Picture 1: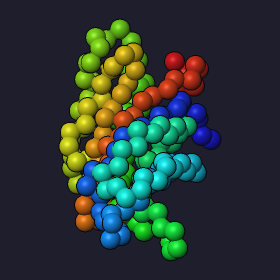
Picture 2 (picture 1 turned 90 degrees about the vertical axis):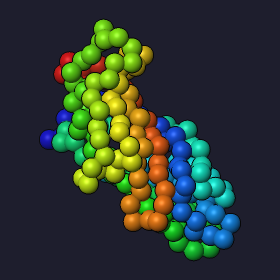
Picture 3 (picture 1 turned 135 degrees about the vertical axis):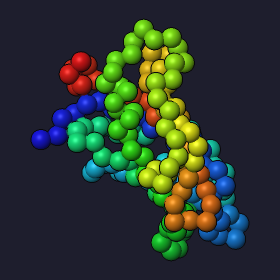
Length: 165
């Protein structure tokens, strides 16, 4: 049986150097999936460096599943084109949440994740205690595409009693 742990707010900050899928660029949007949940950002017209700054909220339960992200180019008359995909393992983030860091100095780095072949990180990503919250800024390199990165920020939203704290 699945055990509800809390909510994960994923801010889709922006895309960087996304692939061209049309002559004038692309009309990108992001689809985020975890387990049976599926959320989407808005479409940004003619932009390969879109800024979304949109918050998508997932409910997190055990067993933990990775977050899968796909970027698409919105097309009016044909199927939307794929513009790459990425995946985030939220295990380290959730482990940090479970440690209960209240009282730490603002800006304390709890853990730093480094890019490797098993993840999609484009650069080091720190899990930080900031403003009484656990926050992680993530830059993901998109796979299965010629170029592109996604910048995200993870925030944990506590549900009283959900983590058993």
